[in-house]
Amino acid sequence: MTQVTSIKYGNNLSTYNGPGFQLTTLDKAIGLARKNSLWPLPFATSCCGIEFMATMAATYDLARFGSERLSFSPRQADLLIVAGTISKKLAPVLKQVYIQMAEPKWVLSVGACASSGGIFDTYSVLQGIDEIIPVDVYVPGCPPRPEQILDGFMRIQDLVAHESLRRRNSEHYKQLLAKYEIQ
Ligand code: SF4
Image 1: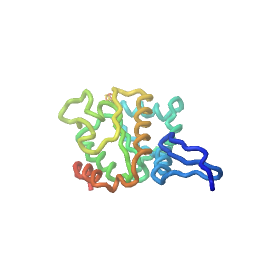
Image 2 (image 1 turned 60 degrees about the vertical axis):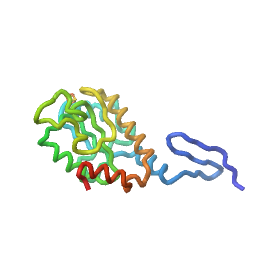
Image 3 (image 1 turned 90 degrees about the horizontal axis):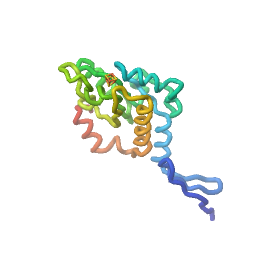
Image 4 (image 1 turned 180 degrees about the vertical axis):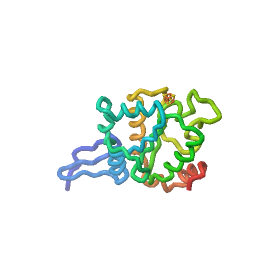
């Protein structure tokens, strides 16, 4: 009989190791692959977008997390990063981009403007993107430093790693989208 020599519970990957084999669950293996290969779509409109550029550049190097491949096509992206002020006129465009992204998808709201309208409490500025699309993680700051954006990105990775493969088909998720009138 084969003997199990070690059991690991790190990185959300419960594994059973022995001579010549390793076992885990499909959920966890796919979660691990997804979290380390996120393709971000940067929806950057103003100053926070500059901080995101710094996050991509050599010093902070988002590529270390498997996300060097930015996508400017919603159909080839699974992480929407909204960085900057979103005017009410632009809101339908952002929502359209979100709808066009394939499931599973996640949303990172970067900075005070994207998260709450920031200092622009005016008739023309959306007071938070969560008025039109669901948001998974908020990054505070005006602007947030690249370290904060990286931290927000890692919180997204935690969600991705732990997400059940069935979540997107669940009633709870459908109700969440219905709240935003998204089918
Ligand atoms: S949160 Fe501050 S830095 Fe970011 S877009 Fe708004 S005003 Fe600019």
